[in-house]
Length: 174
Image 1: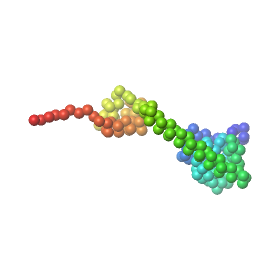
Image 2: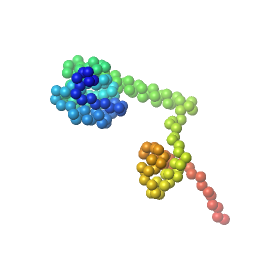
Image 3: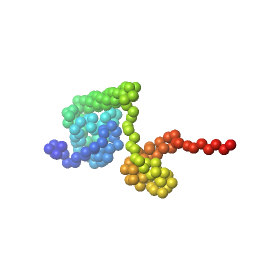
Image 4: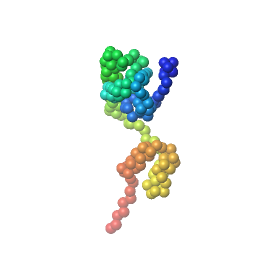
């Protein structure tokens, strides 16, 4: 991009499946009339037609042109605008095909008993640490640190502890 004389470079290391990406938001706030936004590929910028068209419309409203290097699309021309819409639809279709094949593959694997989902992260001290956390003896952050887990993994595991069948002792008073 630097060889193209680009003043600012914004790199998102996230999927283009939605527009809630920090660098995309920074770039959208930064651009001003007369700028040209150059992307490597449409599929890196947005994965569905609606998002792509909304983003390029926002750019157009600011007086900013959009260029995709891979697809050689320049929205400053009528043909470029048309091709943008066509390529956006193709990128969205491709993403949907990938998701559909993935779902089908998982279903086939499940039916064969091969796919059982992601393996749980097991820690020997999980029950004890969660018990300390529930009693308020340690914070959630401390529990995460002790178990070397992210917050959502800890909360999912703790929720499973509640719903998992627990061994019990039957006291029979006769």
